Amino acid sequence: MYDLRKLIIAPLLLMVGACTGLPEGIQPVKSLDTDRYLGTWYEIARLDHSFEQGLSRVTAKYELQDDGSLKVINRGYNVDKSEWKEAEGRAVFVNEDTNGHLKVSFFGPFYASYVIFELDDQYQQAYITGYNRNYLWFLSRSPKVSDEAVAEFKKTALDAGFDLQELIVVDHSTVN
Image (tube, rainbow, N blue to C red; front, top):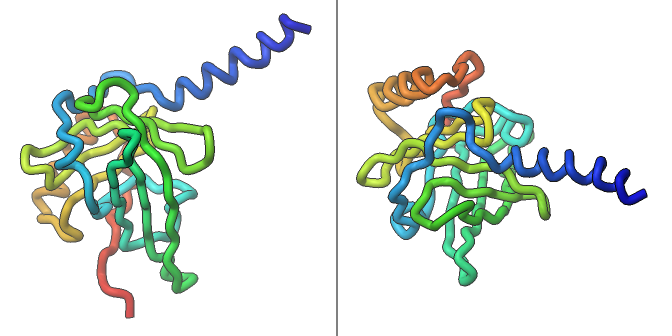
């Protein structure tokens, strides 16, 4: 019986660990200033997933907690349902808090990678991925960015091996 438990538990631990790993060749930013990263970010573009499907006006808000973790509030507007959708999560640093590799959970004990792999010096734009290249976000402090900023994001993402065929540019226009 003991060996059977090992056979069942070991692959589960590997799967959970893989979800908090780094995509091959992607390095998190090394000198993250958490205080400067806190606050509201606007989602400019993303590779779509079921948890964000149909959402526009998406924002992510990060707040430092007493235990050093970050409270994460993701919010977006579902035009078809004429309603806001919000999810609250928790992010913790995988290594030291100056490294842009965190793990985030919106579902109890299950965590997934949150990797900040590009961040400008003014903390105005960030590129995020997950544990593999199926996850990609372009975040900005402003809901609107220049065409040049979007082009630079796409170039960086393509150079890093992301497939952008399913890329969505997020609508931040006002809801009527």
